[in-house]
Length: 174
Image 1: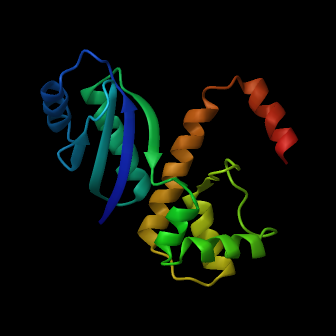
Image 2: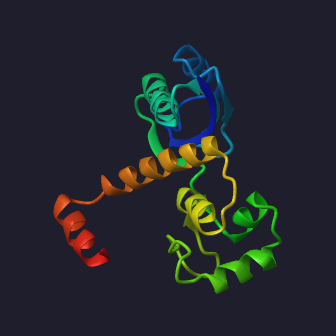
């Protein structure tokens, strides 16, 4: 069994008090999470869960939250989205060196999920690129959690589209 660290963010009913949320979560098995309620109607849980795989850890945590708060809706699983600064910090580069690396490897570096003033990438894709193109040692647990978090976030977004739109955009994207 391995300890997996990850974050789950949910939209929850405004009417639930913090103490009620904490009690329900604890009783549902989320006693391995730090609870954050910074914004009304939002819930962030920082888990350190022991499981046989990252998928088991994340899916069981999601199920525990849904058991505690059936109305909870997943906003985001992480770690997933990263910017230049995040990537630079992860590999102990300066932001400027990371930008130079990106510019010199435009053809092979993963395409950003969002490109603009602040570009965003899926962490799992970035880690895989560093492993294969830069021969960097990658934390396997982080890589596994990032991959499952990305899958959860993509699945969440995909469920919002009708099947015919998914097929149409799949054909255009390839």
